[in-house]
Image (tube, rainbow, N blue to C red):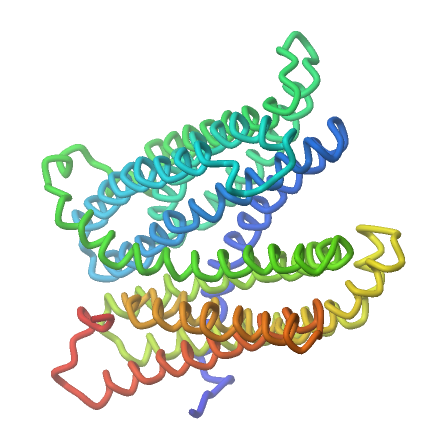
Length: 462
């Protein structure tokens, strides 16, 4: 594969991808920091029980909602494609279909969430956590509906290359969430003192405010007015809702398989002991931060590839994919070197326990090494989503995490007594397998497009 890094088209594509990716990366970091803020506030004011309730409730809710969040991400590349085709009515239909899909995701996944609440005892937590977590988690599950609506609505701005909109709203939401946490947990300035549940209510209010802010901006800004005219409202969207589910559910499952696998790895660490579990949480927190930044490049790459698909320009699709993969390679290599250099410093920011530090530092070596695999696989998923290829990648992710990563991690960690290191080697193997297979899939489809004049860009993912 020959890539001319000095060509004008490559430089232009790099600039456009970065301009899309940077706001997305910042917005996703803001989302992570919102969860971190909740945990810090709860831990600071309410201690380890409150932190335990917040941690497990948010984790379970996030694993469930990951299907909807990942599923709705397919809409932005479709909007980018419609924009490239100058099909304004189709952009409008996709926006409205995305909102309907968000409501359905909210109802279906919300029901799953409440079933988990009803049978919360199966998670085998302490009696105090079992008592307090269901109410907290119930509020979080309700708030997930507004997450889906926000994600669906921001597909319009992202698909039209206005990614800064969600970034600004997320930053404002982060600040609002911090203030509301302080007020509602403690009952300051006349607000009710809600304690632990005050943090959950803060999250709910913040997510509602973010939806209101997004809709206000979309319907007031001149940029979006031509796509949101009332004359398009009679156009049916049922076919697009079905299509979004057709490609969105597999896309969401890709996200779910990875998130659920890493969640099960947490359980496995708990089997090994408290020190291993604490060390794992530190290392995975660092890795998750860099992952979310890489995911921003994946979203941007998917939007750019979607535009190339709309233009029916195979060379543009290839260039957009090349740029996204190259950028994430450079970024994650830099992160790998930083983690290697700063590994002990980063670990000691979290904890002073010597035993935990020693385990975490060893895990950070593996976290550093799998940066490149993690970044490439999430960007490969993004650019494949841009050409609506979701079914085969879903099977690839299931195979990589549930056939390779977890069984190998268990075998090395428990059968061969490699402890926490063995579990992490399994995760590294799964990420690497995913990166190789997904990238190969993208270039296989590009080759298929070039060789067959009958090959349709409309059915690339079937």
